[in-house]
Figure 1: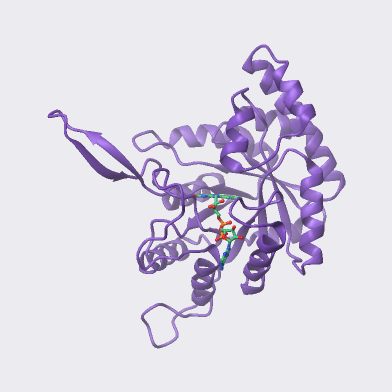
Figure 2 (figure 1 turned 90 degrees about the vertical axis):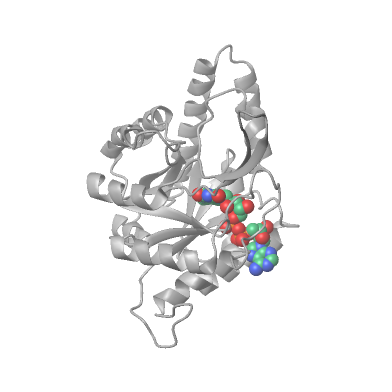
Amino acid sequence: MTKITEHIRQADGKTLFSFEIIPPLKGESIQILFNAIEPLMEFKPPFVDVTYHREEVIDKQHPSGLLERVAVRKRPGTVGICSRIMERFRVDAVPHIICGGFTRDETEDMLVDLHYLGIDNVLVLRGDPEKSAGVFKPKDKGHAYASDLLQQVMDMNRGMLLHQETESYPTDFCAGVAGYPEKHFEAPNLDVDLKYLKMKVDMGAEFIVTQMFFDNRKYFDFVTRCREAGIHVPVIPGLKPLTTKKQLTVLPRIFHLDLPDDLVRAVEACATDKDVKQVGIEWCVAQCRELMNANVPVLHFYTMSKSDPVKAIAQAVF
Ligand code: FAD
């Protein structure tokens, strides 16, 4: 296992390629995931991120017509997937760990599992709210903010467990956190959001991965604001190529971001989603080239476990 910060240091100024995948739906084969990862390995990613998905409450209809509320985790398996990726592809896997749906004790046990598996890079997040709730609610005895979860990770790095008086064997997690060039949707303004981001870095977060953005100026301004606020860790840009016309409304709604006019106009002019995909790839290639010229440490792609567009982009820029 090599720390993400060490991968960046070893690259010696060269921009690295990495990507995020999502676990398959429960009941699907892990081979789906391997098939998505395989075509991207030629670009030598030093690490691959695996998202975490909390359970969702759904109404299950019984044959009698009765509805039952049940909590279902549709995409389980993040820890196991990370282990398989590391073994199969010989790259570091970075599990996303979240507050939502976990007690502190459950989190501790998961971190112990990760430590035993040699998975020492983690992206520490609060997690999305439950779809049915709309607002984030921590589990009873769980964490409310990513900073609280980060504190637990850092405590374990100092050999401190929840219910143990004596010092235990320290873990060596390299923790990253999320950053939002267009502000987290709940923050009253970017200054407040940056205050909490700085808090996480001061607590020990060693790198930041950004929410996707489609206008590089948003990223460059964000990095400038981070540096002015005293945040000096690497800020890894997160990128996603547009692939469907529907995303013009879906992405702003889900991720609280703006799409540039030129991109919107180009997508609206497309007759089919195949054309949109091409526009999305070209837009993202232009973004990547400018970001590489600015010496960003890594180009990190949100693949949604679909490799085609990202492969086309990587072929053009690496
Ligand atoms: P936090 O840092 O806790 O911030 C949440 C809000 O609270 C912000 O508005 C912040 O300004 C504010 N805040 C922070 N700390 C405090 C404090 N101590 N007191 C008061 N206010 C505070 N979600 C998933 O469920 N699974 C994933 O795998 C996943 N991966 C992601 C990967 C990336 C790169 C990104 C950018 C997001 C990801 N998300 C994921 C979504 C993320 O969980 C949501 O955006 C969530 O709403 C916020 O997470 P956070 O870690 O930024 O939260």
